[in-house]
Amino acid sequence: MRGTGDRTTPQAAEAGPGMRPWRFVVAFGTVSLLADFVYEGARSVTGPLLASLGASALVVGVVTGVGEAAALVLRLASGPLTDRTRRFWAWTIAGYTLTVVSVPVLGLAGVLWVASALVIAERVGKAVRSPAKDTLLSHATAATGRGRGFAVHEAMDQVGALIGPLVVAGMLAATGDDYGPALGVLAAPGVAVLALLVWLRHRVPDPAAYEPEPEPTVAVGHVGRARLPRAFWVYAAFTGATLAGFATFGVLSYHLVERHLLPTAAVPVLYAAAMGVDALAALATGWAYDRFGTRTLAVLPVLAAGVPLLAFTDTVALVVAGALLWGAVMGVQESTLRATVADLVPPGRRATAYGLFAAVVGAATLVGGILAGALYARSIPALIVVTLAVQALALVLLAVTRPGRPS
Figure 1: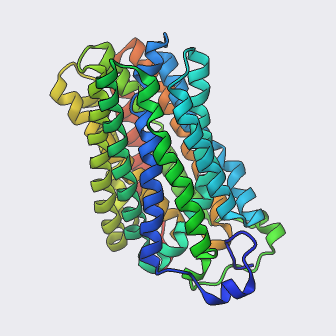
Figure 2: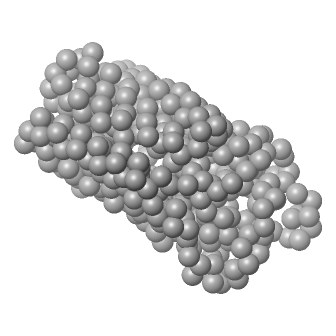
């Protein structure tokens, strides 16, 4: 079955997409821009918010690590379900709805366990939507170039990730660090996300028409049983090794506030700057990927290894540099890593592949969050040494396996 829409009619499929591929990428980028306005605004203050409710560094590491793991590991279920049901738009809209509802309520939470649950719920929304969203986007990037298409989407995504933390920072400064109005203001772009998604679903009910390659001859009900390419698993192993040695921003922001290196209101500003670097890194590596292929990925463990060397010092300039480097790693992770999956896996299994890939990434992220929080509480030098060792292992794995890219 070719369609990726929800109950797409034969007439709609024959008519083709309702807009050009690049316009679709930009429209979807606008959805992500608004959504990132919402949830990145909240994530920029997750560490200080949880700390204000009595959380320790370990608790912050666990909550943010579990949150990121939920956003990724749960795709192990949502990916195959999306492929089986073929209701890509429905999964996408449902996931965004959960996220944009959770964030404003988070600002009202006055108890640590409630706030922690809402942080995780917001990330669950990402798990629900991401395999479907990435599959829809992957069809359009078949026409624009995988690296460039995903990179432009990620760059727009990060514009919202830059604006949201700045708005939250301004609200915190104006209200004396009151998280209620600071996060409540994010309800407006959340409504815009849902309105734009409904419009885009109406204009392009079947984005699969962008991609000329035929799907494998696998029946819809049995699509989850087909095997994924070996290259996909090799690539997932490399990615997991890299991210197991990568700390969450929650631990970084905890360090900033607890060591009194920056005031609370300045943390979202730094996060916004990191998101700006994220966008630039996505564009640069996306272009490099389309030209040089998976060799570009060698930059990921190198950048990740440098983060703790800078971010967990007591010198403000070095900590800022480390946070910006953290943003560069996120840019590669959120754009080029996703583009590579689309090149390694055929369309009929792509949502499942994105779900499985995210599960690997999520498990590694959980390890990274817990490891960073636990080692931070005991010994920062030990945290640095362990991170360097893990990233060296990832480089070796990449050199040995050399995950291929289909011609």
